[in-house]
Image 1 (spheres, rainbow, N blue to C red):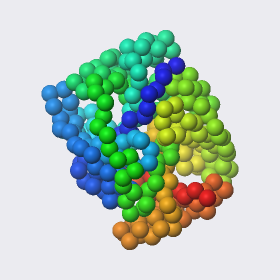
Image 2 (image 1 turned 60 degrees about the vertical axis):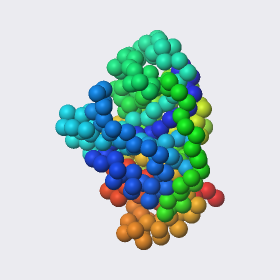
Image 3 (image 1 turned 180 degrees about the vertical axis):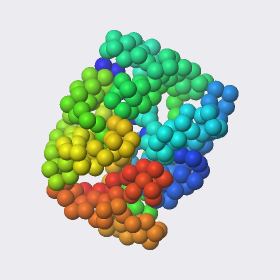
Length: 284
């Protein structure tokens, strides 16, 4: 098992980091922290924003040229979620542990001057590119409760993985990262089953969803894209207020306000968010 220190950020690919960062700050209150430019050893630029109430950040990466890996991602899949980044305690020990589990660290150990890092390829993880790193210095302190945007976002609850192998994913996340399952359910009306897991060292949780029939929204996602990150779920103060605020911006909440056995919720469609499906829910 790889002891995770914390989840640092979730990253998405977009044609323009500036336009995307501005949009997400206005809608969801992802507070802009800083930007970075392509350099001698990187072919992408981007930005980092603070996610309220969760202790993580949200990165947006933009291709610096037609041969950038980000451009390849955009050409193949369009704007959307790209990878998850986690800090580990010891990178060499992490790579050794991966090798012992039969997982080859993708790209070996790299050094960009700020971090030592490696990756777990989506083909080994079941659909997610995991970036694992050790920093050369601690990150700057920021206000972790700033933001909220027009939807009144309180925190990010979970990131969701769409897969055809729920049981295998539960076993993989437990074995590799020490995640702990705390719920499981089946929704016959929507044609899927799912489970949630806690991530060690993080307030963010991890959801896994699997289709149970061919017309399931999960199966359609997998057929259109591939197994991988499906959506990000966030808690808001009020779903009704969030929906009204979105409509005032000319954005129709996807599916309207949904009453369910789980919680009252709605969605921001990827076409309105710049490429990511955001689920918004309220407690109680």
